[in-house]
Image (cartoon, rainbow, N blue to C red; front, side, top):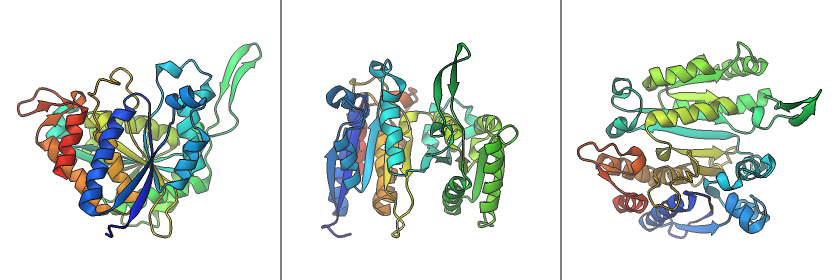
Length: 369
């Protein structure tokens, strides 16, 4: 890799613990810069609640412009109680994160649900069900379904309040996310579990029929279909039997958070929201932790920075083609966990473990690089 190579990153730390964990991710990227001879240019911009306070809008034009000029977006988290009384359309998540996904066509969300063998005691699931750890990838469609379907309505009809959200999918939307899932499975254990509610929803029928059609192009991949309610049970009952979980937007949102808790903590799990692949095979993407702003611990320096750091690793892998560097970060995180370092969310007091704060965890991971 040439030392003259430069990658521009829009850094949107956001609210709550966002700035604290983002600081550690940037420190790790700086260490990667030195080790691999590449330059990162960080363009830090406001987003979410802090942007509302300072700019009057959750997604200022200069933030969008910075994202457009960057090779990728490294995102923290947005929202919190301070802004919950705003009209729904003006609240940070609806007014910042969803518009960013739509603006950049980020239709594929990849959430790895990984439980390291040395961290199984942090999971609320019975140890015999997760012995040896597990590795599940949730591939969630991100720009369709009930979140973006029209019409939407909240108001009065016939003398009472009525809310309408439209759940809609086009065949092409299902096809493109299915190809992402099957492509990912080809590099893993070659199994896709597709999630729907085809027994009661017409869009579930379309989803299942379309996934089956795409599956014919991947004869080496095994496909199973689960209704979403059954999937929620089976993820707890047999998490090690899942490989790639393919889900519509709403169901994927819920199941991926369940996967996170089975793995031990939202603070451990990264995510990537990707657009269509370029000719190079790389993607423009938005990379963020799976958890939220955690306002109850914001400012205390005790948040787990691992999800943000692993999100940076996913950015190196999918947007910049730096596979070796991404693997180095993944290995450093695993090494630190194996050494017994724990932030509060994953600390159980087990022998050989040490409770550390945000900065100490970030420093330990950077030191391993």
